[in-house]
Length: 377
Image (tube, rainbow, N blue to C red; front, side, top):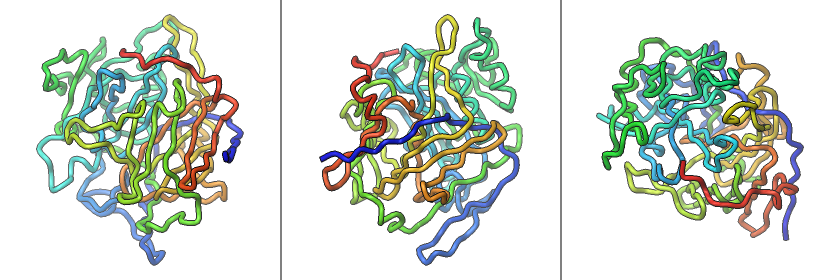
């Protein structure tokens, strides 16, 4: 039997500069709250975990092509955004926010991540929400469609970069070869601990997510076995499978568990968010992916093995993304890492429940998904 979940899909995702900071509200199991320290310790604004961190996030573009996997360091990221690639590319791209990683077990000497990838204009709006040091290997520059350039309006808010390619490269010495000795221009690696040390500005802390330590949070909602995402391929190309023993999701691609090269272990995710956005093709040569990054739209949330639906809202680039449940309440996350799928609103997503039933978002698109293998670009 199949339960059909129909969501009216509108709007797009937005992320931008943030002015001001509201301390993290972390709920204990009795319903009380505590506030996060802004610097030097307390509750992390990026994970909701106890930490000694200050707020100096490092935002890294990471390749997700077949040849780049397994990537290094993605398990150490606090928040990871997964977005569609270019219009002719079946691969997705990862944009990772690192902050707590620099303070685990005191202060690790190195947290290597990569392969570092080029950036698109919409990733810079995501970076702007965190006011983070931006790490990437080039991107569209002086194209025949200036709207897709990363040095135009979308990049004016970026305060500091580590960029290893193009006319505007800077701090390129922060990149190095991977263990296989591949060319840096193809498989650039960086150490986010070292990157954080070159900060030359005081970042403005974003409004943290709402967190709760209560593992019974949302226990009245349907329990899931997992969720399958399409992006630009068939449902199940990207998948998260829930393990009740760990209360975490394991990430899969094309049916294969994805590991972190640094640890050799499967990538585990505490919270999964699907943020439905409108996408299209931006005129140009080559054509670029267009993503409208302000407005509002539907969203789905997978927390403590439970499935909830709701919305996201981002009125302007000067606002922050707000996630809410259908009830209108702000979403409360479990402390830990969060992966946000910035997912096309015309591609199907399939949720499988513990009782064997399924719900399909965008079911009308189910038969229209593109067939074919991943690109190796």
